Length: 209
Image (spheres, rainbow, N blue to C red):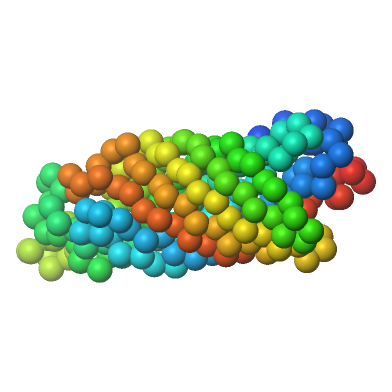
């Protein structure tokens, strides 16, 4: 449900930028982005989260004729959840559960293209939701009722990456630092996502529309 709320924002940003991008002479006017990897919890976040396989989706929207671009991205990180403190109304803590993030970051970046290589950095802010599991135990019926707690928070994220052009798309590797302006399990949330993936160049497709 949360993903359905976040992804239309990225699509809206892409639609607004199409007309402006079409007038630019840049070779990197518009990319879509799909990455896979891991988000590594840092500091006290590692008390309750351990990394699992994660994904991210985004777009790169050119700004002007220089190297600047706008970078909206949805982070769908997954973690193993080892609960430290039972939630209000629950008597048991979850161990080796699964937690998922639905976090939208909108960043401003700068890309430098050197032959088939490109180097970029970005910084921005956003927010979203982190779902953590809960378990209610009914001793009389011997049933466990599973639920999710929605933890909302703002985030700041900065990082960089390297790309290699393979024709109509770029392969990339990206690393960043994400800081959460909120606490989970009474501890600050911060993590280092590292991902690899592909960025198709949509500029040629848009020019034919």
